Length: 205
Image (tube, rainbow, N blue to C red):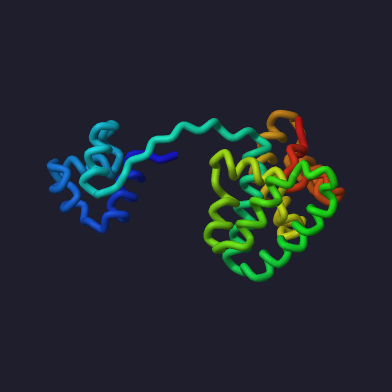
């Protein structure tokens, strides 16, 4: 979530202006800008627009539907993969290309062709664009993550860590089962390949 203070930090970083210079350009006191930056006062939309104009930036407000639990799960798995992509892009991309070829071979009716074509274009393009799509919450990214070519990038233990962080405590609290039991059930599902990157399935209460 973009709080006013985080927006101000991004405006300063994008503009290269000091806080005092940004306040001067926005025709407000430096003390007011400090209060906004520290979250002591709410600048309001009109003031944020004025600050964006002073910073020579566009302030874009967007309304997006909240992610469902399966979408959150898939997003967090891809964030973990994106970290591996950053550390070792050559191997991750090579593995994704192999997976993509297998997925195309199994997609006899072409139902996933749009997703697969989108991943192909990303794999052929700059790594930064690929990483951005993996962790984006926009509609297009949510769609293509339904058919992800990154199976096998995370180890079972790494996937378990992600799933426990997202689902473990919630499922244990809702079901009354010990957290250790939930962890064992998640691990069993991972081992049986029933928790995949684009799957909605996981341990439930």
